[in-house]
Image 1 (cartoon, helix red, strand yellow):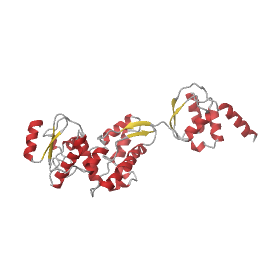
Image 2: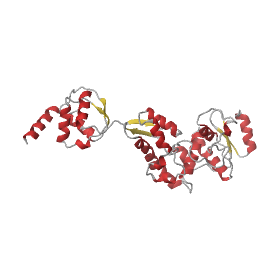
Image 3: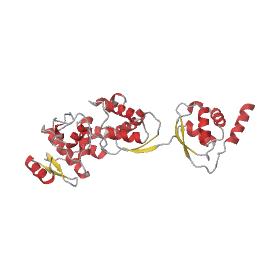
Image 4: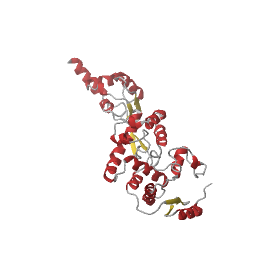
Length: 320
């Protein structure tokens, strides 16, 4: 009892902040570190006076097993017990990262790695065979293993240092929360994979918001008639690089994603579509259009016949 009383008295004295005017700083606690190791990190960072004070406070609060590694924003003005609580509750720094609509999985992996949210090779491996790694029900319906198309574009706040699988899980969780209920309500008998694959084509082809549903309508019309989709964006995906102009030689690329050579939809999405493109794939415009060609300003001319389409090509585009 005397030892406990003295320890409590010692904590009361040590609980005062090191510097009432001290500024916050990032302190990284290694995963699995002991209370003593954490105390030494905190003392070295100048946010507590002595590592032994931290160890004692943790024992008195019975939080030894609760301490969590990660990246923390701590200040010398904080009390010792406040610092203990922050680390015990895992109140780590969250970093905002935005996934733009229409990014490919490879582009998303690069962006996450640049933000320090995982090792690039590990993220790429998870994305490539992710359908076998996660419990989400919608992944069980996919005919391919890649997560291309299902990494939902949004702004996320994520801590550094968490496993790469948890980073990717956050994107899949968001897809499950936002997209799956919409598809179940509005899918009209189309499979989720079909909707997301077509939405990815719309995402990469449409430049103007008002044209998304029109482009979706054209693609569905061509599918119903058994016509090849002949979407330039699928050729670029097959080539694995962006080009401002798709040539006749490019159209010969041997890939199941080349919709100039293969009928129907490609095997899977060619990008990760945003909500507007997904809505267009769920509610396409009802028209008789079978063709479209881009104008220099990014808008499109829509045609009902091949003759009209050829005239539009001659007017707005020359293919090398």
